[in-house]
Amino acid sequence: DSGGGSDVWVVLDLERGIHYSQGMDRTDECAVSIAASLVNLAVIEEHSVGLIAHGDREYLLPLNGGSQQMSRVLETLIMSKTEGDNPLAEVLVRYEGQFGRSSSLLVITSSTATEWISVLRELTARSLNVVVVLVDPASFGGKQALDEAVMKLVSVGIPAYVVHRGDALSHALSRPITLNDLPISTQYSKPEQVSASVT
Image 1 (cartoon, helix red, strand yellow):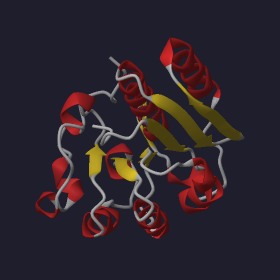
Image 2 (image 1 turned 135 degrees about the horizontal axis):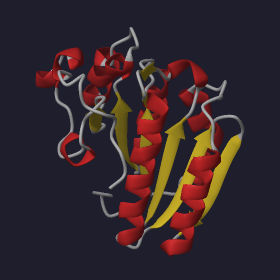
Image 3 (image 1 turned 180 degrees about the vertical axis):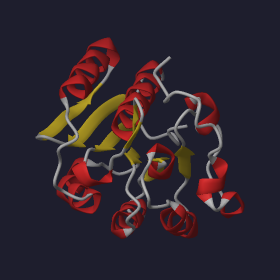
């Protein structure tokens, strides 16, 4: 749900240090699949969509709509590499001028840090509709848990969805996480399944 905002910005976090792999499954590939799915949904709902990804280089696709924009997004996602050196907080500050009032901002990250959440809280004060999708690094072999980030997001009123390795996106994105779902690590119990993919 884009919250009624006419424009939708998708920010994909491709910082090198936050991504992990477990067997053939990788957090960055899962995050890219989520980005593609959310952009596709926004295009179907006839929103103008923009994409920001900070990986091996800066990727910025200005707002646009329709099938051509979807094609541009897919081409960009295919080219992008998880080689970014900039933390998510810095990326959000750098591009906050792109986000208009009442826009929707969808952030996809595996970051267990919390500095970026303060930036998002400031953006919500500008009437932006902010939603975060967290790809659980622990389910992909990472050692850090998302619990602190989730608690802070919930405390500032930002909806957060958590995707574990093997989750179906339709299920993982069906409801935001709550404090009752903590600890996040206990929610992952399907190591035999494969990573989420675009359908």
